Length: 213
Image 1 (cartoon, rainbow, N blue to C red):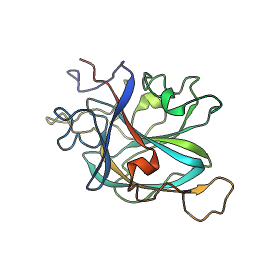
Image 2 (image 1 turned 60 degrees about the vertical axis):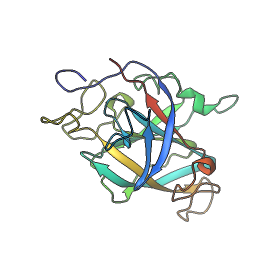
Image 3 (image 1 turned 90 degrees about the vertical axis):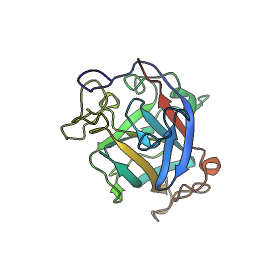
Image 4 (image 1 turned 30 degrees about the vertical axis):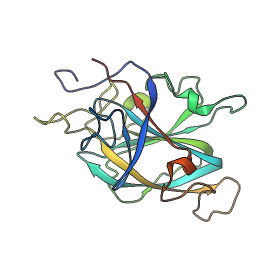
């Protein structure tokens, strides 16, 4: 964090720990620096967190719900639209930064959404993919929340005397979608669960950007 309370990191993303807390899933970088509230969540304070969702077939995500938020709740959603031939899509994230994740890498911005809160969010996209990213808002990934707490450096701005103010702390509770080419019945294909009850079944991983000094 700089003296103006903006944050931009240049190190790449790496695998981290996804934990099912009360209110939904959060990402924990390490047990000593990132386990307390509110940084045990999916956030962009100090580290930039991603949650990667993998389904067994292409899915059009129609709705997303957060089960817990604090300070602010702006998020960014991406879908993998590149070729999967000979590609481990999970590996396309590792080592990348927010600024270059989408560059010739197969990831496309779906949208950024401001002040999501805990009400169901309609994503409003026709994109179908087996791979999706949900992350705390980051302008380097594209899009704008149309609010005043974004910076061109990439992450939201801390406001006031509490350096956590203005950053986004959320927990991912559920997603809803339709199997590509199937009936529009509001269900994602098995083995994914709308309640996100099992990390192993969902094949989700938490991804976090290393903190710069």
